[in-house]
Image 1: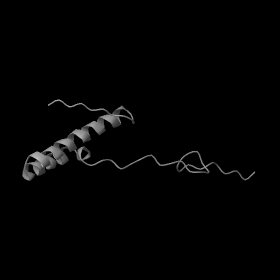
Image 2 (image 1 turned 90 degrees about the vertical axis):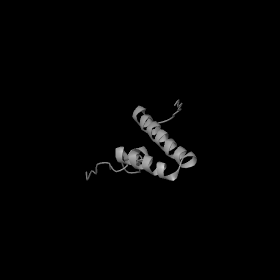
Image 3 (image 1 turned 135 degrees about the vertical axis):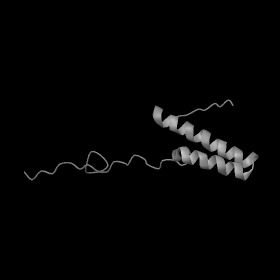
Image 4 (image 1 turned 120 degrees about the vertical axis):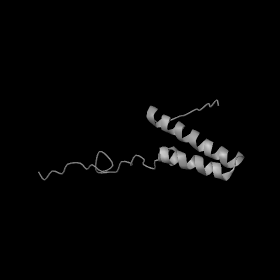
Length: 81
């Protein structure tokens, strides 16, 4: 099987995880479309048992910066004098 993948954005590690996830989802979609449902379920269960992040994306994102501080949660130090 030859697979060509183009990835943009993020760092090296994030790109590797994106490629893993895309390949795993592609295999499951192939089994759903061209093979029977039972085989797809077996493949999916095997992948989830190995590593759940292969099929389920990590929803954590960078929190945006707010006013009154230098970051998302950090505030500027208060001075009384």
